[in-house]
Length: 470
Image (tube, rainbow, N blue to C red; front, top):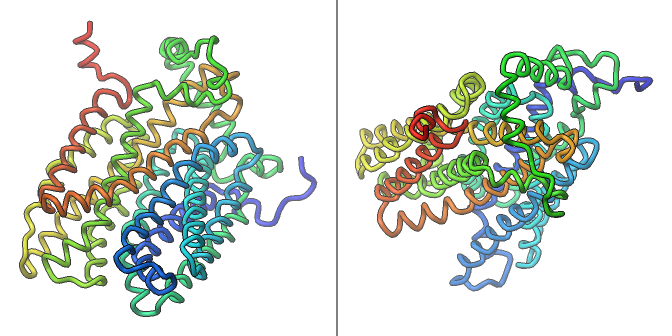
């Protein structure tokens, strides 16, 4: 036990402050990513000697540098996070990389410097998503993960969807200084919060740690496992056998056992949910402003205001949808959410060039899309955590005391980043090739396939399919 308490131990280690810090960290990452994207062409034209006809290819290269760095850094970030004593240090280092990236983007005068900046930004994204989600699980426990993730995702969606338009508007009004001034302000707030946060397991060293959640996370886990043992002991016994990893594993599995879990169809489907969710989010981001310009002659500011229709339902319903995942399981939310998006995406074919009535119609359908995005926000993370937890409980020696959760969230970050990267490419290409309505028809088909796979695999095999097998 430590001899003296840190200043503000109670509020700095509270669930609300820790989760808020994670939320701000994820928001900052997505916001700065989206804030910079619309001004990349202007940076290349104004500061480098890139020919005009090659600006688009260099913009694509800078986007690819970010995505590649994020994908390649996610799993190593998870491995490191699972092997250090606290999550705070790597969490702070990730923000340091983001600060460096922002400064390089602001000051860089060559292609090489800009590429380094985007690589640093990608590394930071991998760290903040991996460490942030692991810290969230450490703080709230698996029983409250759904509503917490739902709340965080509904909050950060505002940054992901609105930042590109906001970046363009600020650039028009205040130039580079305004854009990077907004980013640096957010970074300062984020850094202070990450510096102040005290993890639950660190706070547990002090006498008065019993606050906010009433009991420490360790006691919560013991109580939950005790209830499971009392109420479902035969099921738990079967699950331990089902999720037991055979001892004759190759060395690379023993060194990184999370890879063994990837053979589980439930986990693979959970990762697919994350990929499709990110693809849908980023496809909206890429196509709504251009479609609004074409249909209604909207400028950047008016196009940005359309995102309010998409964001408000997501912001309000995200926590509620997450609570239903905690209460009723991951399968209903995943199947209903992606299934609901099928007809709603098809409805985006209805708005056409016109006046106020068509603008209202477009906003109404976007609001319906926001409802669907809120519902699909939590199932992926919760389902993946539940599956890996079963492997962890059945193989405590293999996975260690803390489990491989940061590694899991590293893999999830890789998949989500891939979706965020692919969404604008697929959405933009399909819109140009077959039109906006048919693009959304393709996205609806992807949602239908995802809903079907979720019905079969998420949360375990449904009873109706089990009976047919018998």
